[in-house]
Length: 479
Image 1 (cartoon, rainbow, N blue to C red):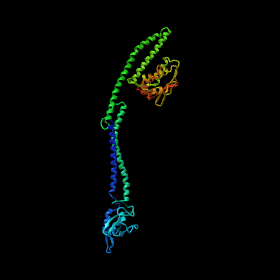
Image 2 (spheres, helix red, strand yellow):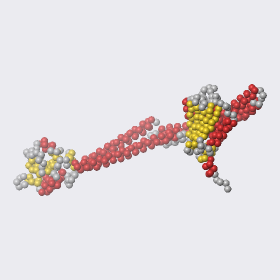
Image 3 (cartoon, rainbow, N blue to C red):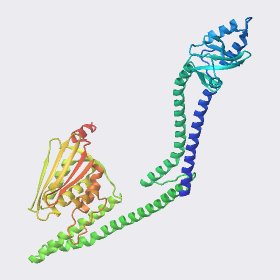
Image 4 (cartoon, rainbow, N blue to C red):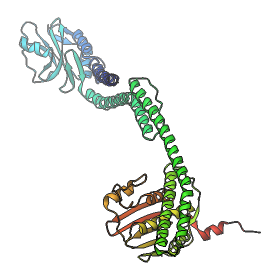
């Protein structure tokens, strides 16, 4: 696998290097295109053609001195050039036309060799062999630049460079962008497939990547991993379904012996013997507790494996709370416990969406948690407030609470919370798990707060659908 990945990156680096070479050759060509094409500027003809014509018009006069024809003079004037003729024997100037004053009248062979290739007193000059000597054609300073036998008009060259430089930069940027897009596409295409495959795996979705290219073995490994995970997930689903069905079956089968035990316990409670009557009450209480735990276990199992059908409808939260609190008080609340129900204006008749029966069960569990886990008693507060289009429901107690570790476990739990301490009270176990599952469907937010030996509170935010009055207003009138 790693060999294919190394090959992919090696191919990518080769592509980058070739692109750099292409870019270099392109810039070299553009520079060469300027270098091999001399820029004449305002000249109608090249300096070579001009000096050749001037040389042809430079003839000896009757007096024996060289004299330039009118055509040659016109050509020099139009070109803005000057000219001198150097004697071959003595290397002295024997003729000149508009020569600058700083041009010497005598030259050494070294001087002649120097300016024949470069400059004469900073004047760009060109030479031509004439029958009467060496003809030198010069131009004003800073007018032309000479490189070997090439010549360039400096103003025109500056203008050309000024205009060509942004074009070259733009062309370079365009080439770089094309290289980046091509190389990025070649690089990102397989990487995108890998990322998409890994994301699908993280979301527990099947993956089927095309097994081709440099990453073919990696794609095959991802496909194989997806197939293995799918098989395991299918096996887990079957196992979970079997577990949930087994729990449901046991829960159903245990009801009959529990009912029998409860019946005998009720009979013992009617005996005249005090000890027997107390034993009957104890058996009855514990039997009811076992039945409640079995029911909670069965419900928690169905909720955990999403086998409990939800009947979502409009729930009057205020009415539901009153019913739960009333039932708790009527069932005989021990004197060491108190329940205080507080609500703000506007809460009455507010409807939320949820399963009425399960929501009531969740509220019962929250109140029973406060009772069950505070044997020495506590004050229970049920508070309902309307804030805008939301209801905030708080159920709290001032009992033993929960420590930071237990609170973290409650907040993060996705299944039944087990107490690992032997013979300890199962604080906030199935009850809170059921609450999180049930309220999580209908609540926008549910939070748990607690401090050891001070308080434990559960707060849920429920989005309001509409009020009961609004619901009645929307009902069709009877004729």
